[in-house]
Image 1 (tube, rainbow, N blue to C red):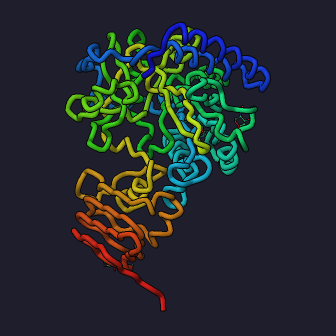
Image 2: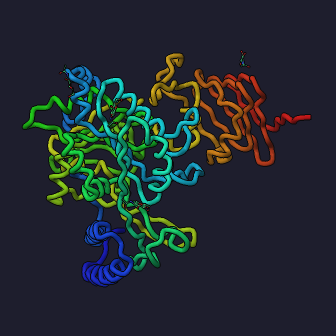
Image 3: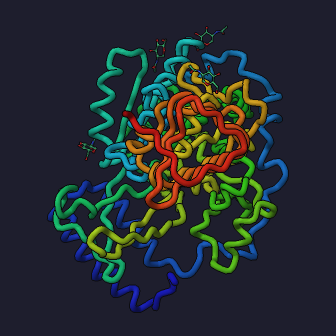
Length: 487
Ligand SMILES: *[C@@H]1O[C@H](CO)[C@@H](O)[C@H](O)[C@H]1NC(C)=O
Ligand SMILES: *[C@@H]1O[C@H](CO)[C@@H](O)[C@H](O)[C@H]1NC(C)=O
Ligand SMILES: *[C@@H]1O[C@H](CO)[C@@H](O)[C@H](O)[C@H]1NC(C)=O
Ligand SMILES: CC(=O)N[C@H]1CO[C@H](CO)[C@@H](O)[C@@H]1O
């Protein structure tokens, strides 16, 4: 599909670059964003065929992905505070809450007792600093979509004892799928241009972090590593064992990059995985897999682990690689159809794809509890429930649950938007003994409902089911019509 004629391609490149240049100069996009875009666009035009040769993929060598237990067995740092002082925590905060029906940054959605993702993150860092008398700063990578709203909310932390830095990731123009020309009419991000720009994926962190000066600043303050994760992953807390592992490596074998991976289940078959390729660990994303091998990629037996996007990365190494321009992250071509029906593409990269460029990179196979993303209202129901307890901004599985796994929850489309979801539950049901919940159609839950085993509730079109307050459903299928009316 990405195969194009070469001469054809050169023309397209020259013409579009020319137009781009005029256009960028006219609209004064930041020089650095323009350089970044030019680079990725040029590489995109050069791409011929898939970025991996399937036959060259190997299983990673035994010691390149270590079990967490082995890392844990090495113990904690002698001086936890000294180790923490070399760390900064970076949260990827470029995304909007659109898929959960919310306006504004995703990190501002309330997930637990009125606390947003952002609140929980700040509480975690404050707790860490207080407990160990350390100085771990929090860094937010915002996008032009999230920066203004995030900063407004950060006001409330002005007097807290936590040091928060923010920077913007780049802003690139979406391009027309046919002409490969930008669709923006000017620099505005609203009105007719509302859909003309995009943040180019989290792989952009390396360039934007360096360009904004924060990389140099943190290095000057004695920071050696960043712990990067998605802000919607509530399991991504600072792990002192992994930190110790990094700090205790001999200088000549410094591990510059750790990717936390975890065992794949049938629910995560699309997640990126680690492979051995050209003598390096490499992240393989589903978008890079040739069509003929997609089923193989998804199999749980051949590719057993997937990337949680919890990453530990050496700051001096980022500086070295960025200055040498030595990180060529595979381009993810993300096609979109805009509201007006126009087909565009946006060129993106993933932060984990850089693993191949770092020295002594490794994976650590962590417990599933370090991967607790909230992508849907079904995820939200789990983290709001009594399956978890909240302590200093961290969620841990309740000791009162007897099974180590979380229930499978599938809420129908009437629950997709967080606002709708909230009005459908008078209170969050007791789910300690739940294995599986499917809800579909117009369903509401009264106060103090308890759900156990497998529960399926289906209201067909035109029907409505109100689960009465105090109801206990254990291994039940509820269907038909069940109304509770005030009189
Ligand atoms: C631990 O490290 C901190 C911060 O670097 C330092 O102030 C403290 O003296 C160290 N404690 C010990 C016991 O070495
Ligand atoms: C980041 O993006 C926001 C929104 O576009 C903008 O208002 C702000 O000035 C940007 N910050 C920097 C440092 O460029
Ligand atoms: C909630 O329901 C349970 C039974 O499912 C009952 O034992 C309990 O007393 C109820 N609690 C409240 C506060 O209504
Ligand atoms: C960087 C940062 O936030 N440091 C704070 C961590 O917590 C300690 C103790 O509360 C403060 O003294 C630091 O300023």
